[in-house]
Image (tube, rainbow, N blue to C red; front, side):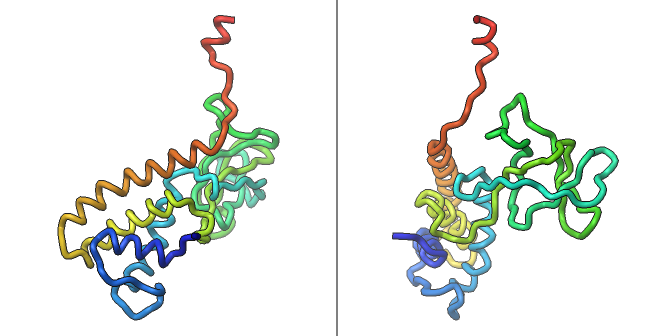
Length: 200
C-alpha cells in the first residue's frame, strides 16, 4: 500500500506515543498543524542527505549571463534542484574520483536566483530534485522521514521524555538503513584499480 504524507505523519505520532491520529494535514488539530509545518522540512532534509535514485535527475544546463572572473561558464540553477551533486560532460555516466569536475553554486549575476559556475563547456548536472510524491518513496525512506518528524514532534506533543531519546537514536539509524538499501539497487562503473594496473 502506498504511503501518503498523512500516513507518514501518523507513523511519527505513533512513535512518540500520541494516541490521536490525523486525517488531513489541513484539519483543525494541534498535531495536524505541527505536521503540516514539520513534514516538508524533514522530507527535504532527508532528500538532501543522499543521492537517492528516485530523486536523481540529469539535465543539460543553460548558460546565463557572464560568470565570475574565477570561472569560465555560468549556468542557470535548475528550478527543481534541491542539491547539486556533480557536473559531468555529455557521455559520462557517472563521475569518479579521477574525473570529477569542479563547480560552485553561487548567486546568479543576472537575477536573484542561484547559478552553477564551472569551467566545463556544455555542462550537464546530476542533482537531487524536489520530490513531493510519496509514491516514489521506498518504505525505508518513509520510515526515516517519520522518525525525523517524530524527533521534531517530541517537544510539543510527547508526554514522556523517553520518546525524545528514542527518536534521537532511531532517526540516524533509519536514515542510514534507507541510504544503504537505495545504494544497493544500483551497479556503478568502477575504474580499474591503480594497483592492478601496476601489477599488469
